Image (cartoon, rainbow, N blue to C red; front, side, top):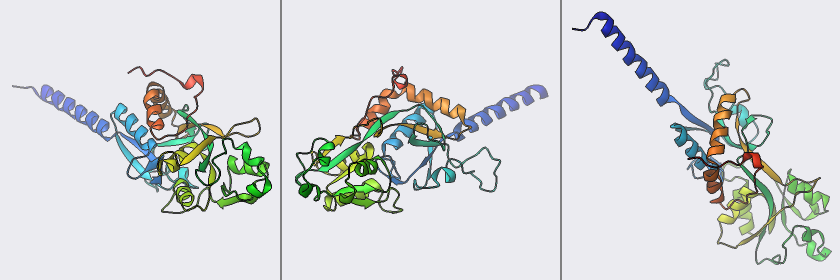
Length: 289
């Protein structure tokens, strides 16, 4: 017959095990994401950031939980830095914990080590009279009569617009907003539709977005010409993941995953046709699994 001490001890062990199991089961990989932002993320979870989140969550033995919000002004404030309970400003619980794609060194978050580098490209629709263009600088030297026929998408900000301004091409630009507020199309989706409708013939677009546009048409429908960075004009950028500025432990966890899963990450991104450039040597590690 068990003593009272043995019964109490047995109960305490069971209670501790149950608590530990519950804590483990409740631990989640909480992602802040845009529900309509191909090729990065979608509510169908078919973007490359969705796939990398799945890879990391599986490695950590966690379930993914998304907080969905259009990635516009106020995104970080209303997702990553927003308390789960809005009335509890001192909470340690937030709506989500990770933004899967931010520029390396992004000032609104603590950023992980870089996990890919891409570049802006000049994306040109073929069979519209521009198939001879193999370098963006050729547009600058076109005869004026031909240059006047250019229809280049031009955003309210970004290196592409700066390049056009520097080279006297603003007059042939077709203006677009970087953050349109359109609930049915992100920028890449709108550019893809307007290229097909022949409202524009070309665009200087960030690599992942250009890859999405190209993926929506038959193969070889577009020329994709990488823009060349110069000392005064940068087109290639490193991308990282963002966490709250005080969340150093989570950053370290993500850094380790970025290092050990580097090959799988690159394979996922390459599968979307995204133009990739080599990462700095210190960010490259062999997958030890």
